[in-house]
Image: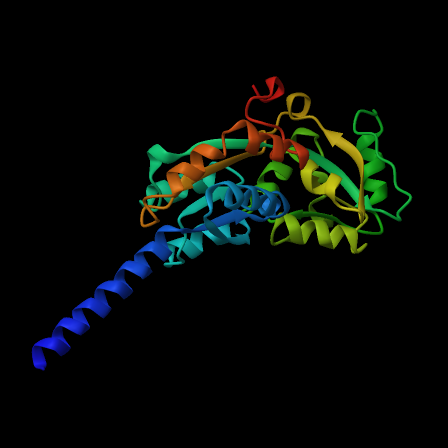
Length: 266
C-alpha cells in the first residue's frame, strides 16, 4: 500500500511538473516602453495568432521597466526606447547582449491640445520669440530627461534649437511618453514634445511642428529588443527574430513608426 502511494505521488508530481513546464514554455512576458503600448497590442495579437503562444505585456517608461527587472520582475524580453537603458542592463548582466535587435525608429514633434488655436513654425527666424511668447502664460512639458528616453531626446532637440536655457523655468517634467501625451491633451500646458507615432494616433492632440533630427541634430529615437537573462529559453528568440520580419515591420509602419529597413533611418 505504501509503495502504491509513493508511486501515485511520483506520477502526480511528474504530471504537474510537465504541465507547468509546458505552460511556461507556451507563454512569454514582454516589458514594453510606454510609447509602444498601442502597437505592442497589435504585434502580440499577430504573434499569438500564428504561433499559438500567449503573450503577457508589461508597459511603462523604459527606466521603470529596467529597474523592475533588476528587482526581480519576471520578464522574458524587454523593448526599450533608447540604447542607454539597454547598456545599463548589459552592465548589470540583466540581458543577453548577443540577442539585441534594433526593431523600429521614431521622430519628435511639437504638439498641443486638439482644441487649442496654436501655431508654431520651427523654421521661422521668429521661432524662439514665438515659443517664449506661447509659454509665457503656460508651460511646456516633456518627460523627465534624467531617466525617460523621450525626455532625453527632447532635451537634445531643445538644446539644438537654442531654447533649452531660455525655457528652464517653464518646463514641466512628466513620468513617461504616455503620461506626457495625456498631460498635453488635457490642456494642462500649451505645448509639449511627443513621439510622432503617439501624436498621429491620438484624437486629442494635434501636431504643430515637426522636429527633423537631421536638421536639428538630436539622436534618432530608436527601439531595441533583447532577451532577459533569466527568461524563457524556447520562445523568446523566435519572437525577437519575428520583430525584424516584414509582417511586424508593416505593423510598426501602420502605427506611425519608421521601419528598420527605411532609407531615412540610415
